[in-house]
Amino acid sequence: ATSIAADDDDVNVLDSYHHLLSMHDNGGDFQFISDALNKTHCDASKCEILTRNFRDRNEETDELQKQALPLFARTEIFDTVHSYFCHSYDVGSKLTQSEQDTVSNAGVDDDDDDSKENAAQLQLLRLLRILDERKDRRQSLTK
Image (cartoon, rainbow, N blue to C red; front, side, top):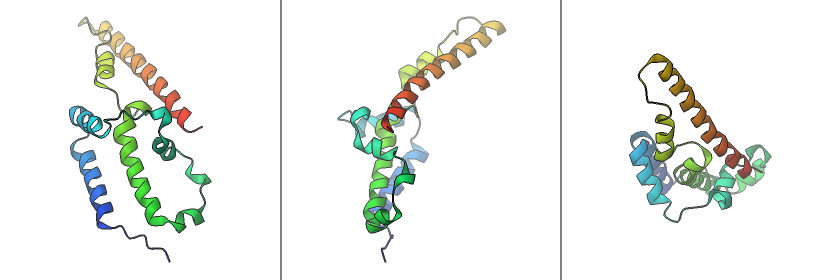
């Protein structure tokens, strides 16, 4: 029988990942971590890890997973960490500071209620445009 017990290294990686998610997943901290882990500027369109992370898991055989379960589990962990911190901007999970500023500053000139409503609609439209571009990129990874 194949053991699925995680070794100490796997537990430490998961603990660190969850710490980063729970304590440092805000704008400045996330950007710093993302930049530190992605110094080579991994190209999402060529990233095998990201493609593997977005694969259709229903197409995998149970037997294949069982044969190398510890390696499979470790690969899943590292793929998740890499995809999240190196490609969240690429796939639309996060907005860059520039994109946040573009959305936030849309139509915010006047203080009257009509202007505020129009600004909110404009902000939503800009956000949707950004996310649509990312959706197209993300879908190209799963083909």
